[in-house]
Length: 56
Image (cartoon, rainbow, N blue to C red; front, side):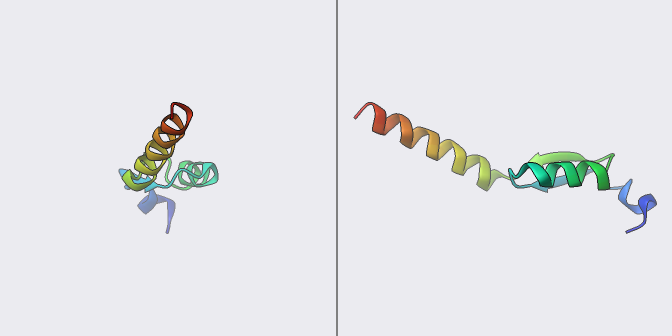
């Protein structure tokens, strides 16, 4: 995509991989980067599971 079109993108949904954020920032400099709900929910569930095991 030409830079002119990429600058029109307002929002990008990403997973939690660090390299994806860097690529999105470079390729779509004006876009807001949002972590997708699935990955946020997965991280929260894993953290909660660790707490449950610790206090069992």
